[in-house]
Image (cartoon, rainbow, N blue to C red; front, side):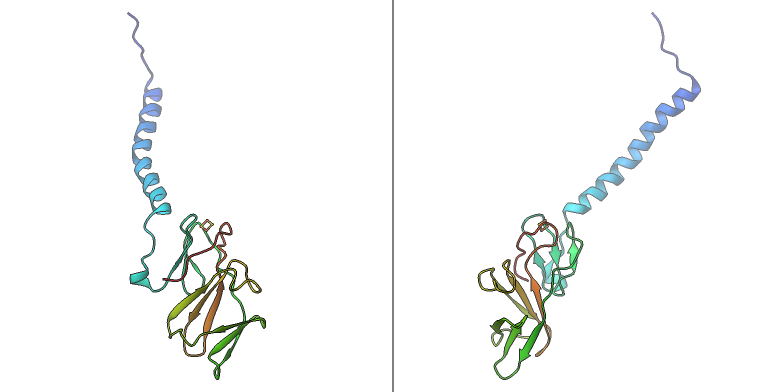
Length: 149
Ligand code: FES
């Protein structure tokens, strides 16, 4: 019977691959797991909008908190009318914000916001007169993000 002898160099090459894989696999697995789990909790960190398509999350300023989206939601200009308690978005859409308390948010559907954004709008009231008006179009792949919750 013939024995398979290997040289010292070959032995080191083979065993180093096994050791390398043993060390690297758990590390790679941990990195991959962190990509698709551990979503940010709205109860701990304020209002968050989540995209139902691939799980991207955005804060009240529209900034991405969790991928795969890496760019902020689009934002729109508005004018606040204190007398009427309304905001005029992009000079075309008037929205009553009398039911929107400070640090609260509401969402408009695409049909409600169609002239401005056919995916809909997220409106967050930062102070009595300061708002964030954001598109509901996810910046990852154009799905409609959920209301801020
Ligand atoms: S996270 Fe993929 S479309 Fe929103």
